[in-house]
Image (cartoon, rainbow, N blue to C red):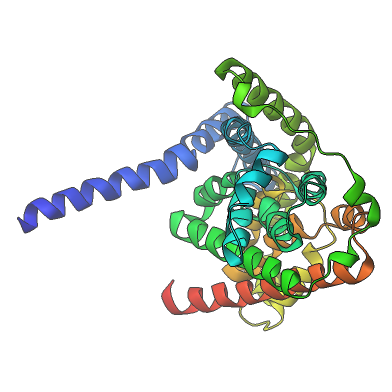
Length: 345
């Protein structure tokens, strides 16, 4: 019986490793690109050749995952227009509503800037402020696409932990804002915005597929430049930045690495598809896991353009509370992951 269990365990581990390395990680693609560059006369063991291999591999891999994930998630999202989401969320009260709001954010494959119009739509539809902020935090930080992409780089354990702590930040943040009773800090015009309900129930399968395809195309057009920028930065870090530099600034020798990564990441604009190649390169060069994940969370949640957009919808006091909650939550997550890495990895 024990031998049989060992065989089953070995087979399951082999299947898991295959999915991790060849399906999500696409290591076969990296080898293929390396062979192609070699046939073109480029030595991938040099800095230039290695950078070109890294760039081509990550761009193709992330693009494939991006298009597939956005298509699938957009199909799911076609069932949840703002008014229908309001009716669903209206059945829940207290922290349960914040949990559902945060979970709803996971099926919206948007960057922080794209999430704000939905936040405005939910607020104008009459949802409680805390619930809408739980959605606003979780949507760019922990969507389903980030789960798959994180798993392709860091493995399923880290990816699932990342999503869980991201949802906790969203729920706690929304709950705090709810308890502070800051409804008067929302700009008056938001309450006057008319909300149009899409007839999601009348959509056919063909309509949903068409909607999902259009969302995938639109998102790809918007995100692809940031993928190129992110992968380009990752390639430079991976092949030209000395490892000791990264270790000194973002490694265990610097107790303020998480703070630095959070504050540096916050003003930047990108989504998870653009930040993952940078995070992957930093991790490979010796940056601590929690520091890298804090950088990713800050970039995807607190970009300067999204804060400018959000300021048009809320007053400075509420905006400051939102930013403070996110920064404190992200830093706690960063230090928590660093401790986890030190103890268990």
